[in-house]
Length: 101
Image (cartoon, rainbow, N blue to C red; front, side, top):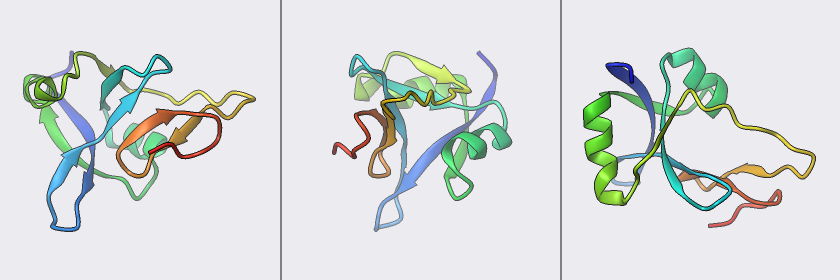
């Protein structure tokens, strides 16, 4: 695992930053990390906020959430069923073209 990652975050109304996580088709929650700012912005969108974190710090922050796996440079797959949908700012979610929150 690289030493430092670009990690997508979301900001609460109060200004607090929270790590953005994703979900696999199985429902398992995963951490998201990118090796370059460009890959993060290309995948998550140009307006996505991010922070830089070391690999161990990222693992330590995700552990209390029950997240055991981190996907580095994930690329969303777009299927005919449009199965990948961005959740309401909180995670990449698997669905059938609708936002499931």
